[in-house]
Amino acid sequence: RRALDPSDALRMSVSVRDRLWVLPMFHDARLVLTYVSAKDNEVDSRKIIARLLEDGRHVACPAIAPDNRLVWRRIESLACLIPGQYGIPVPDPERCRVVTPGSSCVALVPGIAFSRDGHRIGYGGGYFDRFLRDFPGTSIGLAYDFQIIAALPHGSHDMRVDFVLTESM
Image (cartoon, rainbow, N blue to C red):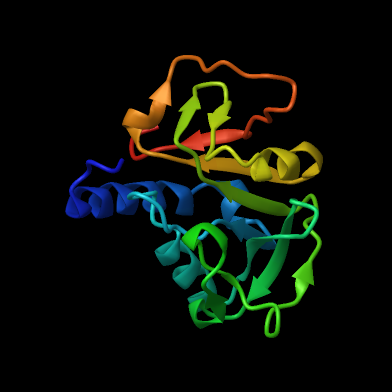
């Protein structure tokens, strides 16, 4: 991803976003939990967030809690995000209340690579794995086609996403 030309990353992100928008489970979600894209040409979640908010949908973004778990805070706009750990924007705790994800939520999950069966390689902190272990909703990994690998090694602590969405699959 790092080697992608930014214009290619933008074009592919638009394709992923267009495919996401027509998924029934995404369209019907009462709350969308999403990462905030900030690293090495990740699939752009900021435009997804902006459109969700424009449409009056509820959006929550993660921050790392003191116990190294993800806490989700509902945002009203992208202006609610402040610089966070690892250079990743997080919801301002002074302005954004914590929400508890339920079964009607969809979580958009980043990754470096995904297998076809939903295993992923993240950035090494295990934050999303700990979150996904008890998440009752639907998880969707967002990636580009070239990030999909036939199989990935995984352990008992590695959690799968329910679906992986790319620009063509």
